[in-house]
Image 1 (cartoon, one colour):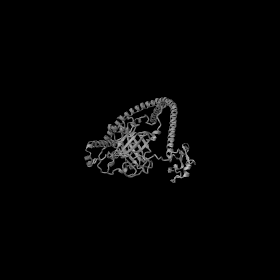
Image 2: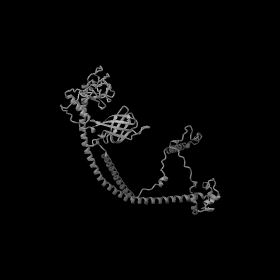
Image 3: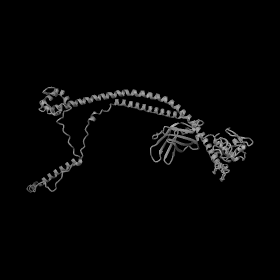
Image 4: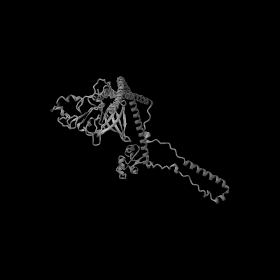
Length: 536
C-alpha cells in the first residue's frame, strides 16, 4: 500500500473515529510509549545510562541521544513529537519548543512560551482530505484510462506483429519478382546496347566520311587559291605569300621553310599537294575569308530626308522644255515611289534562315525504327524493375520501423505504447519545450531562433521498485565549454497526457514533469474499520 493510500486511510479514520487520549510524557510518540513508564527508571534509548523517571522532561539533558527530554529544549539533538490530532503527526527539533513560534498545528510545542497559538489541525486535516480525495479520484480515473491503454496496446502489438509476418511473406514474393524483372531488364538491355553501338559506329563512320569530304574540298579550294598563275602547280614562291604558315613563328616564311613544307620540291601538283595539306591546313588562312559585315540594327535604319526647299529640275530647263514637263513630272513621281518603296523594304527586319551550326552537324541522327523499338522495350523493363525495387525498399523500411517499435520497452503491460510517435509541448515566457517520448527532447526560442536538442532517448531510470517513473534523454547539443545537454522526465499520475513544467536544476541538465495515465496505480480500498486504532 502506498504512502498516499495509508495517509488517506489515516485521515478518514481520524474523521470517523472517536478521540481517545493516551497518557504519556510530553513530546513522546505513541510508538515509543512503552519506553516511558512512570513506575520504572528510564533507560536512555541509546542504552547509554538509566536514570530515575522523575528526571524525564526536567529541562536537563541526561542522555547523550536527548531521549530523556522529548518535551523540553534542554537537549540540542532532541526531537519533539507533535500529535496534531485531526491532521498529520510530525517531529520538530527540540530547539523549537517554547520559542514563541507555533510549529505544531495543535499548539503543543508552545505550552510555556506565552505565544498565542490557535489549533488549526482540524482545518488542515479537512483541506488535506479534500486534496487526497481529489487525488484518489484522479488516480482512479487515471487507472481506468490506463487499463484502456493496455488493452489498446496489446491489440495494437498483435496487429503489428501479424502485419510484420504478412509483410515478410509478401517480401519474399517481391524479392522473387525483383530478381525476375532484373533478368528481364538485363535480357532487354543487351540487344539495346548492341543496337546503340551499331548506330553509334555507323554515325561515327558517316561523320568521318563527311569530314574527309570536307577536308578534300577544302584542300582543293586551297590549292586553287595558292595557284596564283593557274598553271596547275603550287610553287615555293606562291606558298611564301602566306606568312601564317611560318613554322618557327618569326613572322617570315623563308624559301627553305617553304620547301620543307613541300617536301623539298620546288612545286607540287594536286596529287602531291595531298602530302603538303596536313602540314599547313591548321594554320592556313583562306584569302576568301573576310570579316563578317556588321549588320545595322533595324531601329538604326534611317529614311532618306527629302529637301522640300530644293527643286528636282532648274527653272530654265522647265521653261525651255515645256513640252516635256508632264513627262518629267511623271518620271519624278516614279523615282519618288522607288525611294519610298526602298525605305519600306529597309525598315522591315530581315528574317534569316538559321544556318546549321557545327553542333547541329555533329548531332547524332535519330535511331531507326528497329533500334528505337529495342530501346523502348529495354526502358519499359527498367521502369518495371525500378518500380518493383522501390516497392521492396519501402516494404523493408516499414518492416524495420515496426520491428523497431516492437523492440521498445513500453512498460510491464505496454501501457506507454500510446506515447510512441507523439510529441507534447509546453510554452513558457521564453521557450517552447517539446517532448517526443522514446525519441528526443528539444527547446526552441518562443520568438524565433534555432532549435536546441536537449537529449535523445536513453533509458528508463526510475528507482528499483519502479523504473518507469523516470525517463532519461542524453547526448543533446553540447553546452559551451560544458557537457552535452540531458533531460530527466519525471512521470506522475494524471488523467491527461501533458508536460506540466520544466526546469534546469544544474547547468545543461534539465528536469521535465510529465503527467500520464500510464503511471497510475490501482487505488486501494479505503474503507477504514471503526475499530482501527488511531493515534491522537
